[in-house]
Image 1: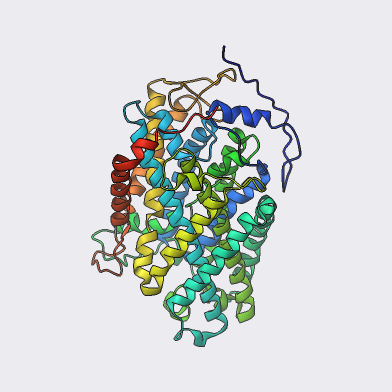
Image 2: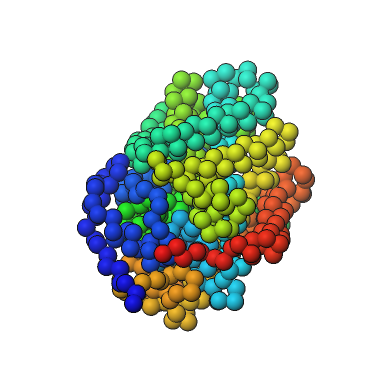
Length: 525
């Protein structure tokens, strides 16, 4: 006779740092119903995982990279679309709060004849998308330090080399690795602290820039000036292609999902944290973008002064002080470093979860967890090593490196699209039932489907899922377009090539080897 699992709801959540000590049988029972053993240590509460979500997104910091006018309306479109996307993902993580995320959801939602294969392809899209995000975040942080050097030493512009940025990238990864492993017990506390810095830094950058700038752009320039730098046939097409830069500011919003097995009451806490973080970050990002556009001044002059990160030149011209601009820029650098640290944590959990289900080469090695820290140390190390290997490409050609990491949007949004489409399909066919805590096994391969404690009910849920799928299809389509109609190797969007290579590799590896070892999410209990 099967034994029913009786949940215990007596977990108290702390504010910052580890949650207050209390029984974890409710969290263990939730994971056991998914067929998984509790292995990782649950050290995140609502506020710390909210901080984690906000600092990985770095939306207000990312909005500093944008251009005029069209970006305002593009930002609102992307922000609204991402709210729909993460509301859908929140429903899914509430059903199955596991580090596996997208590929687990696809495996439980897909028709039985296709769930193994679709889950596997989705797993590879998720892994490569997150791996590219780590390499990209470390690259941005490293080269932003170069931009900071150029701000304080203008004569550095001529001797600056790609390998300088690569060395700085390695240093960023090393420090992130240390925080994730050697002092892993402080990761939740670190994210809580950085969350405060994220909020305070916003005001520390925005207020000096706005108040000390002597001349501001007119509202006509800010809200009614559109450019078509790519020489596309219509302004609308140029707008659709241009919003991809805004999408990057929202990449990584599902980071908390992959930390689910380290969060108390994850089925409820994760949905609220990622949506709260998205609303908060979106608001801050929009305010920072408007302020930057009013204070931008001569764009060509700012680009000439700091070619890679002109926002630093905008700071300099606004406050009239190199030291002041350096402090403001340093806040952004610190936040991008914290984003790299969070991305590394989330990516390593995806590696670990996929290895636990025998989905990737070296799974016996990657699935191991440190008995002391309860951290998948080998997965963290692997994520860093692959990022370092990819960074060697940057020494020879930054364009080639950017081409490789361009899969971050296509990979992650492709995995969202597969999972969201299947949720809509199951929802419309009535295959998902109301939650029942007496279920022994639910929301995994070979079991029934039930809603989690967080969902959008009725017709609103269906409408949101349809909006989510439409938006993801739109972004996925335009994520492969080049920035200019006149395509050269330098401005080519290599995401299409990299995505095709990843899909071909995963299909070939699946039929040659993985289908013998991978059977979808393994039932461990």
